[in-house]
Length: 166
Image 1 (cartoon, rainbow, N blue to C red):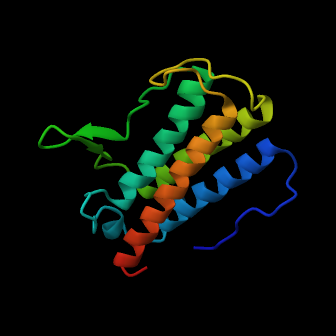
Image 2: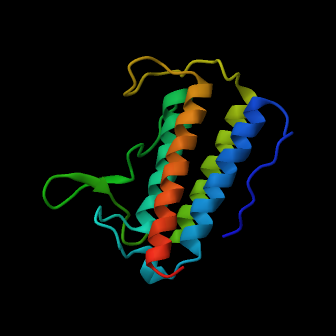
């Protein structure tokens, strides 16, 4: 994976958020796409998630925060990355017919939407709906929250890739 972290001087705060979100999206997508199809669906971690499930999670997570919560738009499956496990626990899940290329393309599309949101809205603007959050958060907080999710999961993926020999 190429480390192409955004450089200083990109413009305003929203432009920096957009650039870092794009950076982490690529880190996760490229990291999963570089793995074999077998390794994408194989877990090497005690938590049981697979790299393909992580890719699905970040695309649904970003869409939940920027489209479903911030814009307040209907989303077909806002929790489409979660399913009931064998013991009744909720865990990440990916349909058997979902592939990494399709999920990565969907993530790029979600990212393009996020970039437009950041260009068209003020960072102090409050979310249109609470939807699971006590108080409608502003766009700035949403950016930081989603960035920390990406940073955490990119690190998780680094570990899974290392255990798989990548």
